[in-house]
Length: 43
Picture 1: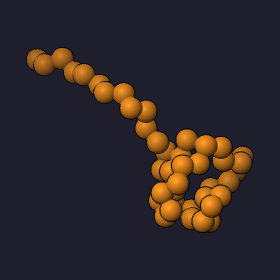
Picture 2: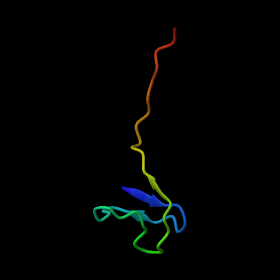
Picture 3: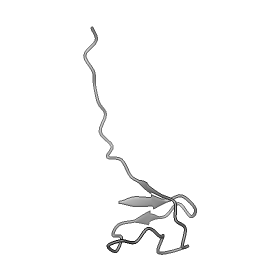
């Protein structure tokens, strides 16, 4: 899942080799990170 940097819409599936937003044509896409919290052990 990707998020467009211009219009902030979520894009579920990108066509192979495409780097454009399907809604606005913007070329800045961010990959959405999973909501996982990492816990580290203190030294």
